[in-house]
Image (cartoon, rainbow, N blue to C red; front, side, top):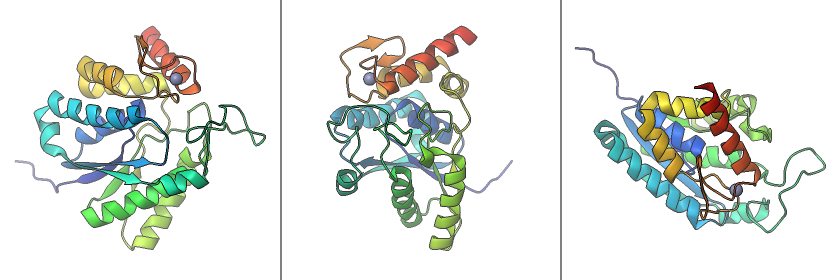
Amino acid sequence: MKTKTPSSTLVLFSGGQDSATVLAWALSRFDRVETVGFDYGQSHEVELEARIQVRDGLMRLNPEWESRLGQDRLVDLTGYGALAESALTSDMEIAWQADGLPTTFVPGRNLVFLTVAAALAYRRGLERLAGGMCETDYSGYPDCRRETLDAAETMLSLGLARKMPIETPLMYLTKAQTWALANEIGGGSLVDLIVERSHTCYRGDRSQRHDWGYGCGDCPACELRAKGWQDWGASR
Ligand code: ZN
């Protein structure tokens, strides 16, 4: 019989398509998986509800995943969100800034999230962090780049005096490839769960159901999700 050391991870989990896929990826790989989410004033009850629904759905999908999935923590970062104000946390228009980044960019967001998550992982005895950060996102958020995460990994490992790897399985995938990965991990039922329960729309709109899930259909997050879904469909 093959024996192996139990492995563990803390997934940064927002309830969106990417982090839902990463959570399933982690559950298919690690013995113990916990989740952390952040309330930075991004306004939507919808997102918080999606987190609960996706976690519940994943547990129902697979008894092994149910046994592996541990506690969830929602961390209040509204103080940070207020000072790092963006189109996600205020009534600012979604548009391009002079520096080439969209107003949905929340300065330092992943750096703050990773530091807080690392503190939690340290306390909970979890070996690593995992998140849905992705360089291929349309917006080119600089804190989603692997180069930034490599530096964060070094900083956290030095500052905590223990290794704190940051797993980013979606880093170089297109949104179509992210749908394909979900299908590979959990087949049609995982894809259906992500379509039905995860939430990506910047406007928090769940009044309209599209092939790819719920959303306003025309914010940048909806457009990206819809395009990924269509590209994946076309490639099958
Ligand atoms: Zn939308």
